[in-house]
Image (cartoon, rainbow, N blue to C red; front, side):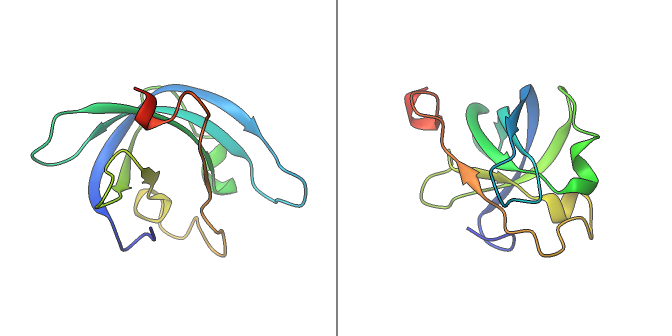
Length: 108
């Protein structure tokens, strides 16, 4: 699911934790617990790990609201749309999402 694809919505950070920095990876990963809101649907929560552009990483906080894209087939699969949130922050970053066993969206 790329930035131009998916159902647009917004999500608020409920919990946030450092997800570490994998070897040979220039950006940090964070664990997000989000409350997701999509037009015409009930709000719901998701938990996952996603990499974060360096220009944004030091500004993350609980309570922040971000634009997201939700997968059309599975709206519980979301990515924060960093380019919409902070234009120019993504650069060559390849957005990566890591599921959390036992905590990802289908377990809620």
